[in-house]
Length: 463
Image 1: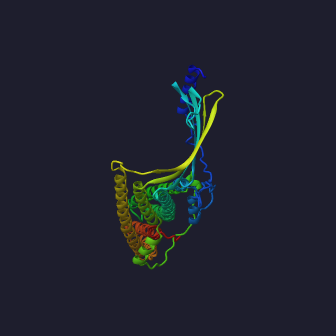
Image 2: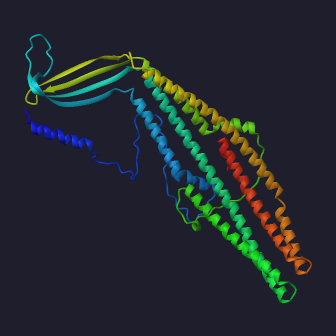
């Protein structure tokens, strides 16, 4: 017989150990997921990489490639997809037998029989200190469809998460494309400003020469200097905008590079496009991952209704048990049994019905969210089509504006040099040329951005 003080000490030790975490999980350590033997199609998670792109001129395809492999938000969504795959494994595991072991010790005020009597008059062993060890196997035979529907719901949620991952990738491609084209357009604007600054500096020299020859007024010099200062200020502003755009693009690609080491390579092009909003909307409803994800979640919610309804039905399981009973000395006996157990819900106080109604309400909410998303997709596609058409018209309207502006500036400079024009006309022509170049390049960037937004709205990829 064990001393009471020793048992009390053992109990306190086990209690302290059971309440403590022996090896806390490091929240900043890399996490690795083993492949589960239950998974028939384990979810694929993008593996982050750290590409060295410093000094490498990045095309749009290269930017998208790096972003898809290295963006933190996309990687996090991929991990959530992996988690949904393991939830499917949890649901499937319910079909397998569960095996458990339980061990315990009890001290009684009066001696207790070690095992139950197996026939009348059987002598038995009695003791105040009894220990037991039991191994139990339980396998469900009938659950009213609960397990099947939980597996189906988990698989549908996994499909929804995979479609959400695909949609997150599409949004990332759009964001990368939009900043890529914005950078190309901003670089063109900066080149126009640099050209204007250089041209204005040359014009300032001419004004100084004319002023020295008493062929120009001093106010012409002052106006030219003011205009030159304004151009330089605009140039610094646009350079800052370009640096910020590069920083955002690098962040989308999961990189941390100085903007001076980060460059992109591409051209702003324009092509005629023919768009049918009705056809594109139908394609979007067939292809957009977020719409497919919403449908999968709706179907999963319908399965959850069936899971809740299974609470009205009995549960039947096969149960087997093998155990060992001991008086903690030299005596021990083994026991065992196997049978079928059935649980019939008779009265739950309305809990099962309330859960069924809750899941039905969630199903109705999911139906409304799907309808809302369908209306949103129609609006997004139609808006994107209008943006493409509008930006196309802007590009067409500005096609000849730059050539006209350059010719006007040349004529006004010649008139000023010959004393036939005013400095105001020259400055206005210079400003008009810069505005035409800025509007044209930004219209080209807006056209490419509109096409990227149309791809996002329809779930297509058109680079």
